[in-house]
Length: 187
Image 1 (tube, rainbow, N blue to C red):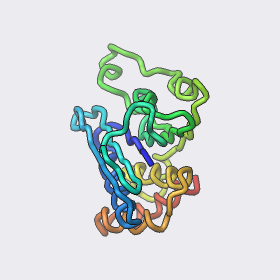
Image 2 (image 1 turned 90 degrees about the vertical axis):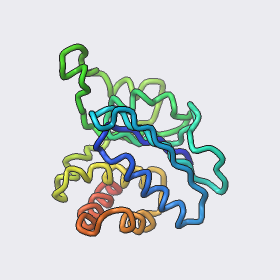
Image 3 (image 1 turned 120 degrees about the horizontal axis):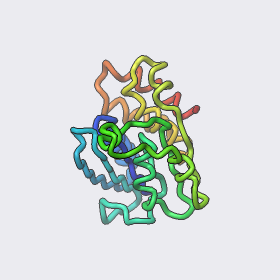
Image 4 (image 1 turned 45 degrees about the horizontal axis):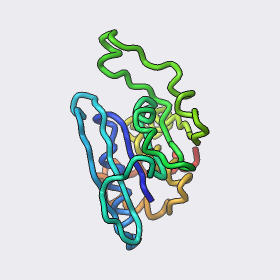
């Protein structure tokens, strides 16, 4: 399974890749994770490749080979859509984070981002992750809401993800993140 995780710095893409890797390891699968940080500390694009299977040779996903794109922001999904394979699924947050060129007025946020994602018959699932995360008291748990949604769509073992979550998240944040995972799964 090839999952491309995209977002901007601070949204927790690296945590989600770690949780997916831990889940694969516990299931006895080979897993390779590769990260591209870009200008992540300044709100720039962050890309993580997660590949799992019986034997994985390369940590990066070739263009056109991602089974799933898990995106924490619509423009990032649009930016990396070309990685999706035919029949793949994009799972994206409906959240809009304005990049610096938009903030400065040099560019405009594409109002048709959702329509452009759906173009060419691509299957896209939009999740209102931030309100769900806020309902458990932590807006930063939006990434885990998105992981829950991916779990449902990709038919991942939710209890295995809960176990990996317990390994990867600090105990004081575990309850909120577990609730966020289940909210995303049921969304």
